[in-house]
Image (cartoon, rainbow, N blue to C red; front, side, top):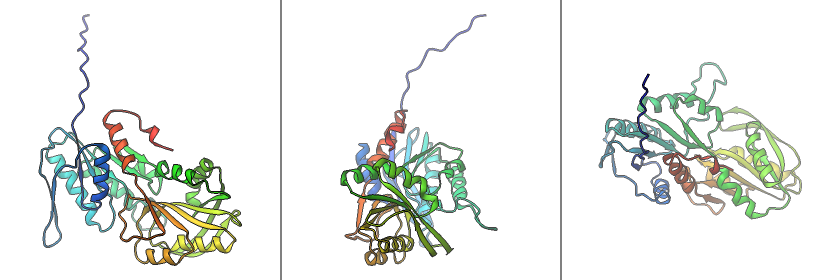
Length: 320
């Protein structure tokens, strides 16, 4: 029997092109600058009734298209992402990668009571229905959300940026605090890296964004405390935790939180609270400037991961 083998063909990389939605244009520009390519041109229009239309003003045929868009409120940002994915698919893009620094609806990751939706799963279904081939995101509210997708997920960690920054501060008598039992794993990783103590806040909610009772498990007296979490929304829980920890004798309380949604009275609460500093990423654009808020950019992290994915290289070296 004669078996013929086709000669090995050299791998040719598809051309990469980055586009930005309108939710966080500055972040997308920073990613593109770090990646070394300008953003592609896309025309996003909105009709008088609010309907969204997206049109790519340059060819994407046969190219790998990266669409950078955090799915922050309003929900128009989510619909805009779906429309941009669909437009790229119909324009014969080779692959479509949704770059979602903040993945909205991630807090709805399970049925915690009867007759509620699992919003995170619905988001995954809609992204795949629109035609996405891959998703890049950061610090999902729950790791299991990755299993809601049948396409590859690149899940990055803001600790890659936060931990070296905190290490350089050389904070003495440091204690890392998890704001709830669900954040214990994340806080423990920070404590190990920084050689710090660990404490946990235990809270009971009566409804969303409202804490009924809170206590702290662990020693915080005469300690410099850093609270670690993935999302800050109305800042009610964080500010209550900070004030409680200070009442327990802590020398200072700061917070390191990935996604600064900061909705409603969040800014006012932070200013009035005992928080020394709030350190966040630029995954969500801030609505206001505050002397208490320090922003660390993750644009380089996303650019490096995009580059590694396109070069078929491991991205594990991007994680701390």
